[in-house]
Amino acid sequence: MRDINVKPSFEELVRVSARIGCLSFGGPVGQIALMHREIVENRGWISEEQYLHALNFCHLLPGPEAQQLAIWIGWKLHGVKGGLAAGLLFVIPGALVILALSVLYGFAARLGWVSALFLGIKAAVLAIVVQALLRIAARALATPFKRVVAAASLAALAVFDLPFPLVVLGAGALGAIVWRLRPDWLGLKPVAVTSTPSERPWRTTIGAIVIGAALWAAPMLLVLAALGPHHVLWQVGVFFSKLAVVTFGGAYAVLAYMAQQAVQGFGWLSAGEMADGLGLAETTPGPLIMVTQFVGYLAAYRAPAPFAPLLAGVLGALLTTWVTFTPCFLWIFALAPWIERLEQAHRLRAALATITAAIVGVIANLSLWFALHVLFTASRMVDAGPLHLRLPVSETLDLRAFALALLAAVLLFRLRWSVIRTLGLTALAALVLGTFG
Image 1 (cartoon, one colour):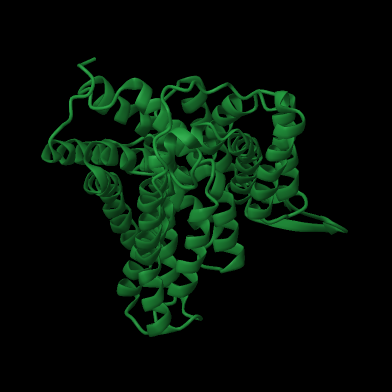
Image 2: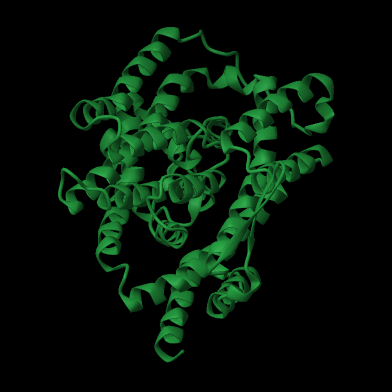
């Protein structure tokens, strides 16, 4: 490791940030590891202690933690200018790739070979989501109380069909209460106080909130004035703006809620297409939550008036990306100066720890949702009082999808293949099955 506190020039920061943005495959774990290697180990621009403190801080915020960590690194090294450069370069490469793939998907999705290709991708995505579930559960469910919260969260979503935001907010409130009554149930580790908190930077925070909120709202006000509140672009912008505020726990946590609303609530795309979008996001650099751009593109592409379909789709994708990632910059610029104080906010840490436990149940619900729509071609709803449970029709099991999902599980869990290699092989296997099956 090189000497710490070596401050790079702005040009160096831009160059390294662009490199990270183009190589940030593997989801948040891989992205955080890549930034650690490039920034802490290879160049010594940030100390190990600073990096870990910032990572803990980003876990307290809604939105993709890897994206926010990139913004914080830029902010720490070169202020707002650095934060903008590092944050934008972390997102732009993946956003451009996803946009191009979304355009191709919109034109070619109904071709036979494309459908076969994406059957393999969807089967692999099911195994990938289960892998994410097991990894997060191993880290987050360290106490019996947290395991009960995870199970209750799964039941609330899968059996009682309660709204995702209600489950998340309820878990946070429960964590704050438990911290006061039985803090040992949470198993929180003490945070070492490394320095005296700086003066309260109210002016910086208020300025960041005002400017960030204005930028966040600007395209939405333009859409409202030009197209009105019933246009699909307004619906897309409002939905993903709300989503940006409740995405604690990473992309997988919010995908089930997003998928159910986009598919069943708005009818923007089918369940299979939602799985296709997640597969595309898994194979491209940048945050996994970039799958929102795919949803925004298809939603506007299929209800384009008064625009041409391609233009409407691109506008939907750009608007979705804007309202999804602009809040990340707002949170960091407004709250990063408070990092030392936030780390000592015990009740907040308790609430977030309980939300993280609930997120395990949310991801388990996502796994069930994907399994239902990938492995079966039909399902039925069971309504009995407060129970609202969707069950598969066993006779509609897709044996090809089942075999491909089993193959993906073996590659990921047994042979420990990377996500990209697994997606590639299952897609190729699906093409072979589609050709000769």
